[in-house]
Image 1 (cartoon, rainbow, N blue to C red):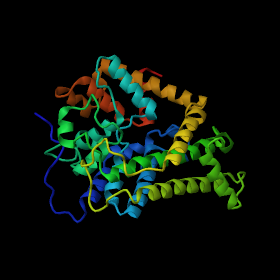
Image 2 (image 1 turned 90 degrees about the vertical axis):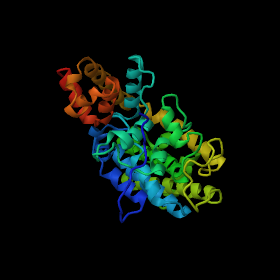
Image 3 (image 1 turned 180 degrees about the vertical axis):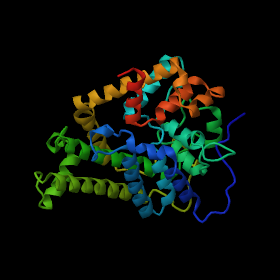
Image 4 (image 1 turned 60 degrees about the vertical axis):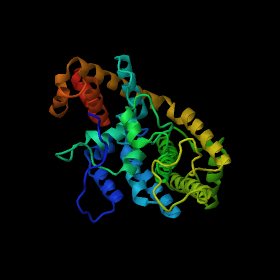
Length: 364
């Protein structure tokens, strides 16, 4: 039977539909687990560093600010932002890449994709109602989660997804805002965490014209770089403000905020949300700089390598002996394919639980 990702009747509710979506996401078990999932630094590194949970909250705050200023639907953007990372595995992107690799090497060509996993979490994997799976979110929220990365059409997506969500179209403008808010959030807080950890210095990033401009703004306030915490705080504030105001200025005359434009704009059409070409170029250069200076740092790579081995070991062990699955997942083997049940279980784990279970599984 073809799965139906929408719609189920909803009784009268004092909230608007997107605020209801937001609340259901916040109260989900998958949302709570984000507290112990890696952004860049493993959760065990210290209390200061961002996790998937704090990242999602920061994305939500930035998206709400932008949508509010542009006259868009703030609650819709907030719901999409809070849910956009629910499908991430432990250990950041390396965890998802490794799980994808394990599945494909095992002969399962559809692999693993964290964006689609986020969609599956809210539409299938969360169990909150007796009559159906998922959180019963609105079409626009589901679409915004599903279409978080372009191109929207992907080989592993079943035909029914295209039938219901029209993958040849862009998501709502609110979803586009979330995509750029995600970018603004991770660029700024990765620099903050990187400098605080001692893995990079502001000096390492000065070859970026954008960073030089922001550093000058902080110094114009009379704050010295030696005043570490204050300097970092003001830097993050200035960088977020610069990017947010630049996005608003570029986008404000390109959007129609009179209605929710879900699944109506052709995916080949230019996005109305973004930055001018000069700033887009500077952002791309900064991302390359962060990749080289921070994400490829030996300390980060060492931690990620450990996470990669844990994912491989968990997948191999559970495939060999699925009786190690918890009762909730083991029961699903009666109706679902083993490799997908195992992948769903691994993806749901926090960093610390994945490491603990891996060590228990192999007697370490």
